[in-house]
Image (cartoon, rainbow, N blue to C red; front, side, top):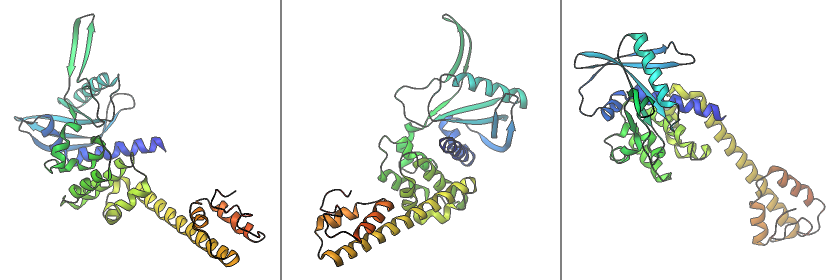
Length: 299
């Protein structure tokens, strides 16, 4: 399940990179005029086990470049070398200069490196630099609505992971007027928030937006699975509550008015087997004490 979560997370990040390439570019190069002219899909690279889902074609001052986004949760020691080889492979294969922008998502105190260096002692032989974006530096601009396209990331970028942050995320996402982008952003918000909140609670929190999320094809199976799990859990809770109420009524019929402590004890039972055992014990018990219902823990 953990690997599936990682794969889904990778997919939702790529959706943001696809929908909002221009916004990411403005963060990396705020003083540069550029034009997004196209997208290359499913790009194979002449490196083992490497593939880019898409590359953007951009023009800057009349020259065309390839643009590739890399999203990183946490920095890895080998990552600068990977950026170097990946960018070089794309440049050689497509015969166009490639711009790789690395976006870091989980807050860290020190800046991650932005270069790959080969050196002998203090002698630098080669240096390959690349732009990095620390998205947590932009939380104020996201909250203000200036960068609302990054709202699904807000819960990850804020220091405090609270329900209030999710409320603000949802408000910002619902301002998106493009139906497909809005659906993808809602689904992305749930996927990212599932790192910090229980899924059944999240499906309830985003309950009014579930139908919109179904328009998001990239994690449809995951969404449907989550909805079904939430519904099943709800049905199970209803069944258990029905058993508890029936048991309380049967006890009152047999033993008279129940102490509040006994009623509370039964309401705390959340395992079907325990409720079933209490029901069986009721058939032969002559007192609440024989059933273990004296305001303490049931046996």
